[in-house]
Image (tube, rainbow, N blue to C red):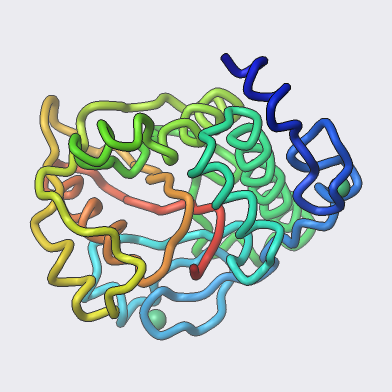
Length: 243
Ligand SMILES: [Zn+2]
Ligand SMILES: [Zn+2]
């Protein structure tokens, strides 16, 4: 199927148009990695996207790391094309980009041990961490045929050797796609959307994977049900911020 598809629509690099790959080696190097993160709430810059002490009081999430920015046209294009075609090859590129980003953070910490403060433990060591994709509602999943976050989560879990948990977190309420709703609407729209089934997550740390983070309210709602189920820390890792 993919083969025929590729014949009809030859793949071109989204950066330079060269045929054969969604992103050629040269353009891959042009993807910009975020060197700084910030608190989701007050936007104060930090190293690991952790929510600062005060802001954390209103959040279930511990922090969110975004590898790149949606303003980077190449990243935006990759994410759009990925959603449109659900090409595993694009998932691989996005997975590699996340991996590159995390390794970069890790090596920064080795060079600058002072940076270690507030660092989530999965950077460097991976004890008791589990990866989960942000789920789609069944109806949306049927319509689209895939969950774009899940494929990226699978790639990352495999490469980082962190166990993957699927099918515990679910989206119970159908909510309209959020692109056009403002941040306040978004919050009420998403409230009570998620559920967590199955075994207790007592003491486990969860890394939630999504393609894009905007307000973070989706991740925070997921964190809420995960913590109710016993999770200790919940972090988000996303391909891009904004969108
Ligand atoms: Zn290129
Ligand atoms: Zn803050």
